[in-house]
Image 1 (cartoon, rainbow, N blue to C red):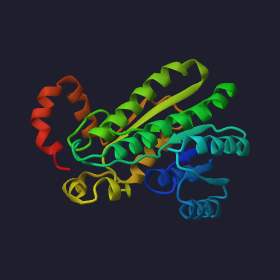
Image 2: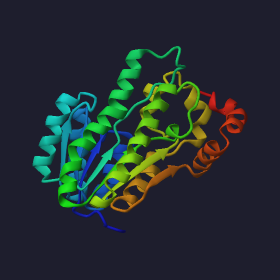
Image 3: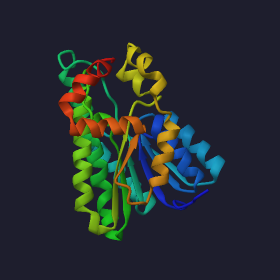
Length: 264
């Protein structure tokens, strides 16, 4: 097994469940030292203890809501002090609410942008200077296929992920001469707790369950790409092909796929 990240220091946000937890597990297997950030103290404590016991790696955990940037900055400063500098930042924290725009509330809009966009930007802002100083690093932003293919009942969520992709693509060009890699990860629907909040009716999951990715699948791709100049990771393959078709023939694609898009 490749151990290309052995001894590297990795900060993962939203690490207590789903993709973040799976990335932490796989990175620990490869000998990385972990710095886990999420809101749920008990889950973080349990995961940290488990990973240290199983793999003998260093694993620190920190509680913070990435949407509260005033508090977050202090936590990020503590992580930098404890670690001496992060090699890889995985911006994974995020959530969605699947409602029509008419039904969605302004509070939901503000919360989604606060976590999915401003929290991600704040974590990047906190870690980037130390990476630039040492001339190396990798920033991995978990975006979504929703950032490429907007669908009904996800207008606000899709807007946040379009913002993440725009930020990621611009940042990649800004830091390309500083020895820092920037990767966007665009998965389709994944079997995680995400849908406990996004799809409370359960109807969307019921409609697309057979197509859903496992978090371990996404995590494996992410960990394998760490410290490589991978521009994007798009999963699953058929949905990635759909996003390309959408960019080339948006009107036709919307007409043909409109019914499938409306299954939320």
